[in-house]
Every structure is written in C-alpha cells, then in structure tokens.
Image: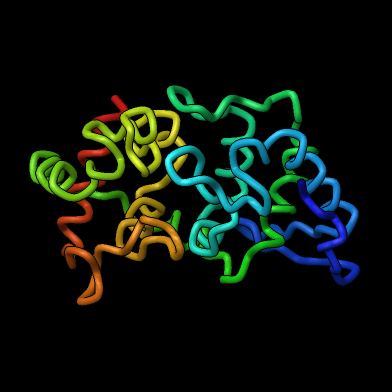
Amino acid sequence: MIKLERFQFPLLVLFMLTGNQTLVADEAMIKEGAQLYAQNCVFCHQADAIGKPGFAPSLSNPEFLSIASDRFLLSTIRDGRLGTGMPPFAHLKRDKGRAIVAYLRSFSKLPNKAKEVDAQPDAHGDPRLGQLWFDYICSTCHGPNGDGYAAGGTGTAIGKAGTLNKVSDGFLRTTIKQGRSNTRMLGFSGPAGLANLSDQEVDDIIVYLRTLAK
C-alpha cells in the first residue's frame, strides 16, 4: 500500500527529459502518478517501485532512472514487453503515463544522463565472441537465451525484442559497465568489475544480444 503522505514536495519539481525539454511536475501530478502506480504497477513492482528479484525489476533504482529516458519509460508502459510478464497499459493514455513517470522520477538520486547515454555510438563487434561472454557471464542470471525470469533466472529478459527494440546500445553498454546498485546486476568494467571486460568485449556482447531480437 503506497502512503501518499510520503510526498512532501516543493511546489514544483523539475525533471530533465531527453532533448531540450523539461517536464514540470507539481505535487498533484506526482500524487496522481502514485495513485495510478498503486492501481496498476504495485502488484509486480512492489511498494516504492523497489521490484521483486526474479519477478519484476526495480523501477526506482538510481542507476536505472539516470539512464532511462522518458520516451523509454512511456513506451514500455504503453506497449509492455512481449514475451514477459509486463503487459501493455495503453488504456492509461499518455497523460496518465506521464504522471506515473513523474512519480518514478521522484525517486531519482542521480543526474539524468539519458540524452548522452542514448547518443553513444552503436556497438560494433563479433557476435560469436559476444555469445561466449554472454554464455559464460550473463546467462547465469538472464538465462541461456536472455529469457530472464521465464527461464528461471534472477535477471530480466534482456534477449527479448520487446526490451531490445526500446533500448539504445548506450543504455546496454552503460548498464553492463556500471551495473545497478542494490541489485544482482553488478558492473563488469574496471578493476572493481566482476570480469573487467574491455570496451570491445562489452560491444561484442551487445552485438550478440541484438541477434537474439531477430
């Protein structure tokens, strides 16, 4: 159950979107989003959008919110993710979807980097090498074909077209390199990374993932 009294916002809260747009979300809009979230999303993504391992991802994770554009969030709400437990919520229409996004943005703790992340160049590499890394590292959580929870994994379905058709290579690259705090998705870049993958090895994985969507 979401406690709306949690929200003690200033009159206006500004959220930076992709491009040069700024969404002005007032307290009423965020409260509306919280109510809509409680009616449509809380059953899977849990209170405060913290998610449930092996069932639904966290939508309030700081690293996720910092690289997820509003277009990505809105299109996911509208279309769902085919082949996963995320159904479409097209009946909510754009205004209600934006209210839910405003509510999710109220959890943001990091700067919004979605524009620069999505502007990163497309990945180029060898999908055969990418599959070797995927099978060795990624499949343990995301399933042998990136099927995620459906394959009994603790990670999301990153091999489904419903996911891959909505995310940029920059989104995938940043997630692989940096991971997401307080989740099982740890970073794979740098000395502190689980595998310290090179930039090329990360791109090989992304290129392989793109073949799964086909």
